[in-house]
Length: 116
Image 1: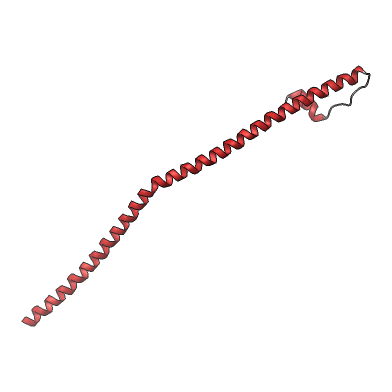
Image 2: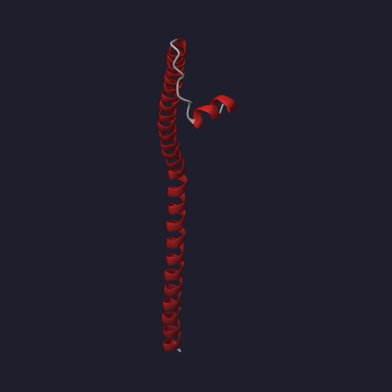
């Protein structure tokens, strides 16, 4: 009977070891998953801050380009108005000297008619 008790004790020890190893692996995986989740949660605010900084830099660059475009547009409008006034003065002088100026281009006639 001692042999059977010894054998059952050895089998019990092996089974207990197997269950312990299995439980240790499961606990290790759960710990790794929890650590990974904690790292992701901790990195989230930093990532959001980095994203916000990137978006602000892009917005500032686009605002600078928009401001440059507006300045250029104002300058071009001013140039066109000045040129139109100059052409009007020259046309008036030509007519004053009895010279009929050439007809304006179709695009100019359309602009004068529609404003577009």
